[in-house]
Image: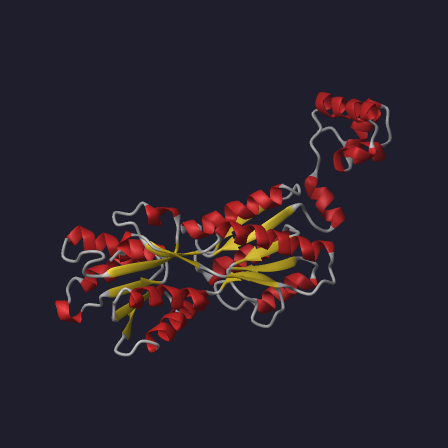
Length: 335
């Protein structure tokens, strides 16, 4: 049995095909009695609209592609949820792609979203993909960078002042009397990591006698943080940092697990610890974690707003929104 078509619905309801189309797309343009009759016919015939065909005719869909670096990181899952909620208010849907810090997977999702003719792509890039994203824009698919500034102002973007955040975190450690500071860094290709390190370096330079050591983590995960913590507890006490600033909360929680499980170092008495992102788990850690809070809900909502601006005014110049982070002090740095 073949599927009912829009023409079948029109014949069944005794209206023109254009009326059925208006009921589906612009219901306010149709009289209430006529709209009810068409909807009854749709229900009775089991009609399902062919969105693929509609998208081909329109040149785009009602979907938005979102590519994040790591959906396992609560920071990105919170942004994704906020973007999805904001998009739903205008009848759009967000389709999520997780690059997993992998350029190949990132490219796969960009290609996929282009094939699907999405309205726009929101992306936290793994590396410089400006040429590929420019090709998307040339085809009419709008692009917004998320948690990343647009280096040449080519695209709209929403990001955080991570240099300020790194400075804020390290200055807090210095303000509570710590002088041997260590920054636990993740992969250096991420500008977020290098910006936070730049802020830490600036803060340390302002305090005579303070030092900054960089501890390289293999990833931005809890497990990578535990590896750093395991290495720290093997050191002689006089060679240990007394203040640790981690590039994100997952690293900080991993370090904390290692130090507290082995019971060799106390937080904050021996080592004060600061994370970054202020994910939900930070406040409920074994030792509640001091962290730099990023407004994830605002980031997700703003990304959708910037995309809407581009869609409503195609000739509008790209706009950059930069939020300031906030220091949230908890027990891991309590004096």
